[in-house]
Length: 480
Image 1 (cartoon, one colour):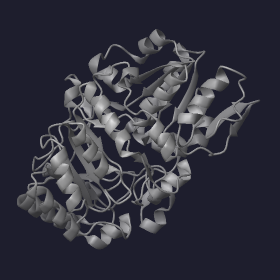
Image 2 (cartoon, helix red, strand yellow; image 1 turned 30 degrees about the vertical axis):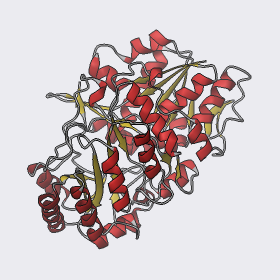
Image 3 (cartoon, one colour; image 1 turned 120 degrees about the vertical axis):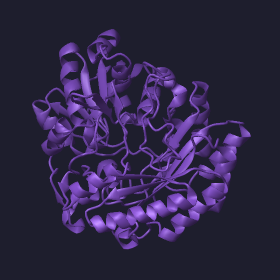
Image 4 (cartoon, one colour; image 1 turned 90 degrees about the vertical axis):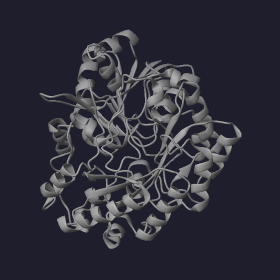
């Protein structure tokens, strides 16, 4: 079977510029493509955002026509993508009427019933982990056409929608079998990269995006180190509660240190030397210490940004980090979200980091010459006075330890704990249903921070105006 796997970023058009958002491709797409390839299928991974940025006139139509896929697998991981994904689906069905269209990703997994009911051009939805379901689909289409044995799968038969059981979750053996770095399967393997180069270390950190027309060496390659989450952040659709609901996964699992190092080495052979990890803080069960030692044993000289959103890294981790990665373009980022420890604990759980642990980590990093960055949120439970207190505390840390600062609104995400149980967190969501999120994604101007976070938030406008005037907001889109 010929399968085309497509990542579609969110898009907005205005008089000043065309903005592309959600340019980071889910790490699992390359792994699914590699598994298909190794089992005899023809496969191509397309980053539609890179295509638009590099050749604006070379639309999805030409890409589909040149490959002639039997299966078009589209990722709808983030809710911001919904309207753009819908548009690509409708175009694809007109151009490749014989192709079967399948959606996957966290947002698709949450809204799978609505998608199958309302989007007739979508033939299938995969919920949760997608490697074996996509492979089973390819085999079914190439054989009997019986989809009843495809796990995590939604389809139509005899005018009825069928939903197979959520019976497949990748275990550590499967994750260690998969190749998350087979860039040769991409349509443009040397142009993919993250957006955050060159920003770490500035005191106001406006996070200017990478110019997508530069070489691949200027972008970050996002690493898959495992799946699941150990944290229960109220606003996150990737929290423990959300993973259980959408994936059936009860606890996080890690890949082996050597397999992560393999991905770094393989991506480096393609010219990538900057990497990004956003998967759980370091701990006794994590592979990160062994991974760093393995990289040194292999004499791999690369940069890394490591996000710690639970407990901050300890002394040993910081020391190993300083010995392993290039100082330039490397950083450890922490997410205090607020200076109010009680409020932080309410939204993130009892395991949330403390102010003293944050400062100790910043001091460790400064001692070893490691750049640091702090992320703060605009939270419903924090009024304007609380925001200013957070900013004053953040500025004092920046002056003392040289860390850069980013303040951003936390948006409503489908399947996040406070979306599932808003009364517990005292929020009144404006985005509840599938169509609420779809309409919001279609109306958003992604060239600016959102005018509303998707829920009622007294005083939000004053807070967003403040962080914009202070130059604290992130800018994580690119222009085409």
